[in-house]
Image 1 (tube, rainbow, N blue to C red):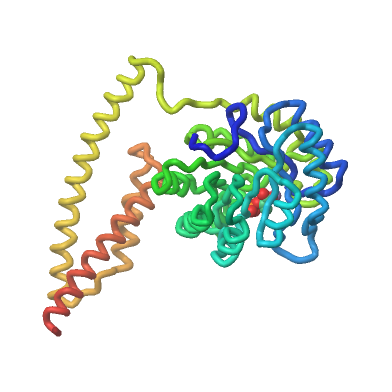
Image 2 (image 1 turned 90 degrees about the vertical axis):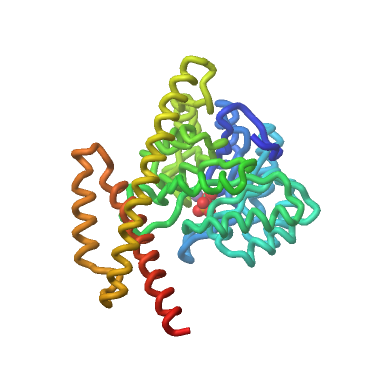
Length: 360
Ligand code: PEP
Ligand code: MN
């Protein structure tokens, strides 16, 4: 993992309640987490960004003193969320060790810049949650603003994305966004926040395991001494005991095998995949040649590029082959949607280029 100023036993864990609610709740939760020894950082939100007014909006700056007491007693570094320059000022005054920026803040470049400016000259670890919706640019942009302000101890937190589609998750994981973030910023540690992805306690173990399986660098999990009494996110918080069990059940994976025989076996399959992908590319080339020929006919005969009935027919046919070929129906739907999208693009270009030539 790149140097980001934090370390601890694997898997790296930040844990604590969604919100700081009382001095007693903070110290008892911190003590119980310390007893189990899984958490490297203790978290609690002092200011809570709530969707609707009137719900519990955090206890405010007083919570920072409680966090400091918890740090004194347990020795665990403490983390809280900041959403504006004033929060940053308060947090620095109170010696908070780690800051995180919430999904509702990452989404707003004005706030990200304000926070970055307030942090100039202070090299404290800052964790940036993904924005509410799957916009990789905003996530990277937020990280860049902090980097330009001189913050080098940076990490991202994958907490899932708002979706209108019915989903068993509170926030769709969309793991591919993490892969893309890794491609752009290969050195950046990425933690996973299974609590805000799951939104309930049933999927926490499963989401945490997926995070390990895809080699993310750690977890942030909400834990409350009495989750049923929590003033925010009660449905997704677990007791420190339950968290210890979750961590015990996690299977931590390594990136590669230590055994030559296994590495060889993997290589053989990968070589075979490389050859198959070459074939796939050649088949796609043939397919697009036909797409271009059809584009030419559409141009000459004044036929529209997109035909709804053909689209329905094609998608129905391709997805109907899912079970006979042991392929996921949704996968086939997405694959052919992309292929079709680019077919339409190529044919549109053929028609537009021709009209440019004809109407200079
Ligand atoms: C939180 O961590 O409690 C929180 C508000 O998270 P998010 O910004 O991911 O919704
Ligand atoms: Mn929360």
